[in-house]
Image 1 (spheres, rainbow, N blue to C red):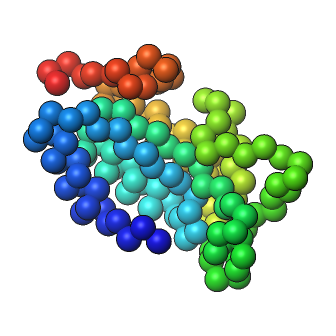
Image 2 (cartoon, rainbow, N blue to C red):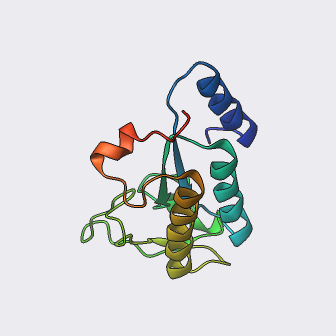
Length: 144
């Protein structure tokens, strides 16, 4: 419900570049309606806009949100036991736990796509594969 557009995000990135402000992109896959094509569009946006660092998280529906309150209105399936499970917006590299699926993407496929986006974007931008706390906020590319 934020109403931010791809154009808004691209403009924000361009302003940061123009004024020498480091830019970290926080992205997410697995939203209601997510498809292979929308995941690829997210990957391409990251490659095209060259953030200094980025995160790719998996969508988790939370209590009190419209998705949980009225799942029939959204293209998403989930079976979450909030009293018995811990939920993280990101988790440990290689141990991501998808908590939702769409009509076209299984939980497992979403996790695969999330990992693929991270690896391919990091390779394309010359960023370390496994970001550490030191590199998360201090990564620079040659020529920056």
